[in-house]
Every structure is written in C-alpha cells, then in structure tokens.
Length: 197
Image 1: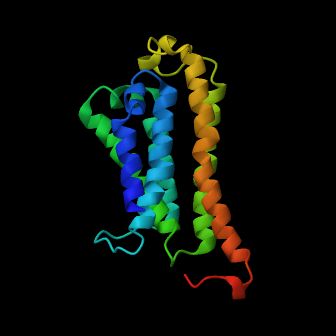
Image 2: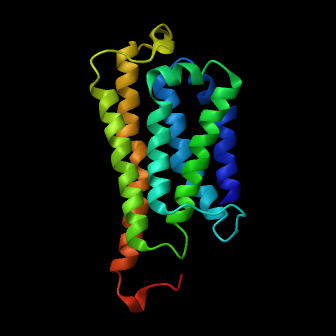
C-alpha cells in the first residue's frame, strides 16, 4: 500500500497532469481528487498499525476539518493566491493531503466505530458533491487565473469549471462511497462469516 500510495503521489506531481493544472481548473480538481481520494487512503492503509505521537482528533472533527479545507482552498480569491507562489501552493497540497490522510486513517482504523466511520465518509462525499454542484451550475467562471488558459484545450473557462464541478461531484466522491459501502457490508454480514479485524 505504501508503494502504491507513493507511486500515485509521484505520478501526480511528476506527470503531465501536474503541468496541466496550471491551465485547466478541471485538471487541478482531478489532481486534488486523486490526492485525497486515492493517495490518502492508500497511505492510511499502509500506516494503519503505526502509532503517531500527535493525539488523534475524533472522526467528527476530522470530517469538519476536511470540509473546511476543501471549501477554503476552492474559494476563488484564496485559490488565486494559492497557485501563484511555492509556499501557498505547497500549503494547499499538504493541508489537503494531511487532513484526508487523518480522516481515512481514523475511518479505516480497526478500533473505529463502524457507524461513525460510515457517517464520516458519507458526509465527506456529500459536502464534496455540494461543492461540485455549485461549480457545475455556476453561471459564470469564478477562477480568474484560468480565464485565459483554457481555450488552447478547446474549452471555455466556464466549460472547464463545469467539468471540474462534475469531477468533484461524481468521480471524486466514489472512493468515499465505496469505502462506506464496504464498511456497511462488513457490519451487515452474518457474524460467523466476518473476519476478525
């Protein structure tokens, strides 16, 4: 899992997708979706049994923190600052990854209360879907840095933003839904067929 997570992480920052995020907001959203929905759970599973010195927050607080950071970094004025310099850019990336890692690690922990874990994953999926819907149905482009960068790819700034919203609304939510359903299926399975966790 650690190797897979590190591999996807390297791919995100060393592949053409990373360069494409400069021009397309939709590529940036796809980048963030892979960071928090693929890299974070892979790393969380890899470090599932490792104890960290810092105290862990309850799942409800981690769910709120993830929502707060996701919405904060996608406020147009904040996003505009976040992509112009190395410090704000890496602050954005690391805060999103760190919060997502903590959430996934807590939700997938063997000692996690199944109901709380399922609720945290579904709540995260819902708030991501809400942000995606807002981006999809906005009547005008919101992100100034991409107003003059999308045409080379055959997209208007509004179409690029709508595509970004759809990515966040559906594919980015799928890892959370799948994980919640897997946790639910374990709880609904007959006790005799459950694996000892």
